[in-house]
Image 1 (spheres, chains in turn brown, red):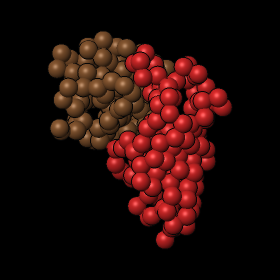
Image 2 (image 1 turned 180 degrees about the horizontal axis):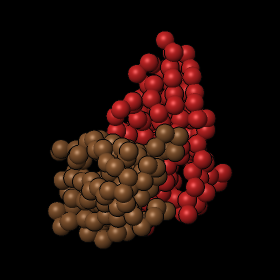
Image 3 (image 1 turned 90 degrees about the vertical axis):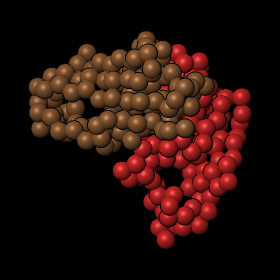
Length: 111
Length: 113
């Protein structure tokens, strides 16, 4: 099976703009989780979608939002970008039972 | 919610020696504990996982142990090789899907040839 894919791989945005990132899970996986990775902070959980519904949410401001489509593909959106939003954004898909498989990530730089 | 602490943050070992990374968790409802390896510029890769009904699991040079009473679990790598150099993350969750996977902050392992 093809692995998890994310687009775009790299993105440069200016403060105040918004951005949309996309994640295509492994075929058959219905759960998609999003994480923010910054140096020294590990992987911080943003939210999880399962069958088009947000199932879990982390402690991020409302500027961070997401959705999932009927084909399980997921998007996350960050509005009013801040310098501190610069990070690697990873998505992971799961078929259940806890195992998650990560995509290559989208490197977002906010200037 | 769940909180996962991971130690040490950096670890250097000589090639051929063993490496041990330790994690503690706070939520007694957690029953799934995976370990991920992230090489520089790459995605995190699941290398081994353990569920709370098992105390130890091995896969070649890698083993994970779990102490439910003390709420800690450890990753053991034997006969380390330079290609083991990476950042390792532990994580904990309930496999019911009702709680997210919570990660430790990572351990940077350097294997010196």
